[in-house]
Image (cartoon, rainbow, N blue to C red; front, side, top):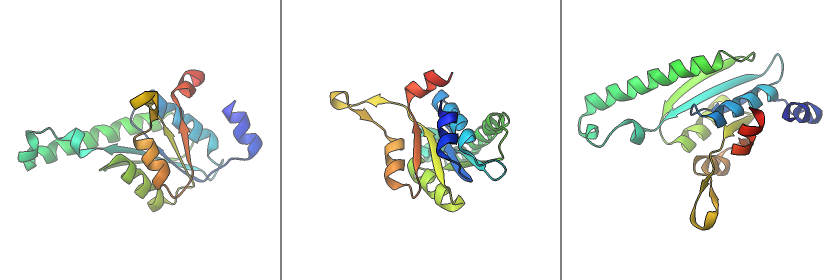
Length: 160
């Protein structure tokens, strides 16, 4: 259905950024991005952001050399996993791995590559009073200089 709607409305983009955290929602976001890519011109930029807080444990923060090795290992693992993910696409893909705060890195990367669109999976979390909190997605939507298309959890079930 999304494919037909995208074509009917002429939604085609040349430079699409897809933040990918190796979840089902990210895979579905990548499927949408491939549908939105302009045939012959479109390029998808896959981005995985390694968060330093998640990469470095509390004891390692006092050991800079060990911390740097762990970060390099995590980056290398992410690069390998992105290659596997991008291999299934028929659209040109450029892979990026960065370290930092996810929303800030996503927005900075979008500006650097001149993204026309960001397509990202959203993991719903319920906060106080049952209100959905978007975390990285909401910070990205607020900061991004281009449109952000989000894939909700129900989209994952509908597409698989």
